[in-house]
Length: 275
Image 1: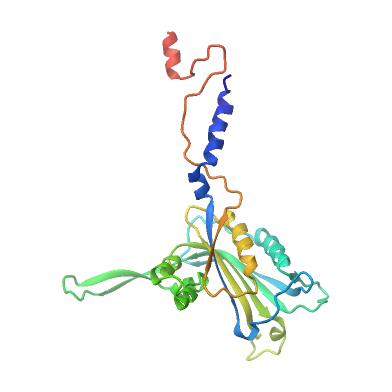
Image 2: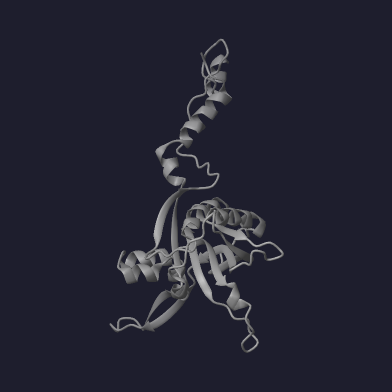
């Protein structure tokens, strides 16, 4: 029995999708760093029976550091439903318009790209062989280290300095969820400014190389949600599947078999043989 050309091509492509190469390429290394501020440590974690209510605020899509041309901006409507869902699963519920029960938190969420911002510098060559030496430095390194948990990692000595800097100097996609104390925000303004006090913040990121933000948002939010309101002593890296990924492995072109009575291969040389 011969397979029709189209069916055979689909079979080859389907098998390629499940190749080890394709399986590895579909994985994401989700990096999570979460911190509860000292004044709020030890408070009970929300549950379905004893939820914590909040007011949501979206800071929207933001490109941090060096902007990358061609990146598509992700609208709030693509992100908010996912965040709302996982927050509810962790015992955080959106307050109603009547504010009953009274919410305790303001949750601010943002997402986008986080890239090292390189600045070229020149210094005098100490060897005297050249007039100057050129080098690049990451001017937003502190921000990169904070989001990737680099400061924690170096403090805990769980990874060496090279690993921490490597994570902090690669292009990444990120999601950050920050919780603020609503009661503090409702107090009278000081010097014309509304007071705010951070309760906890969870930073989630993945390398942006060979992927796009639409593939990474769902796994980032899903993996990071279990650490909302909790502290990670060091950054945690979790392997996750891309959302809706269909990355082909190596596809080999094979001779197509004609399913007609002749059973011969259908190729350019067959026509010349007939002449």
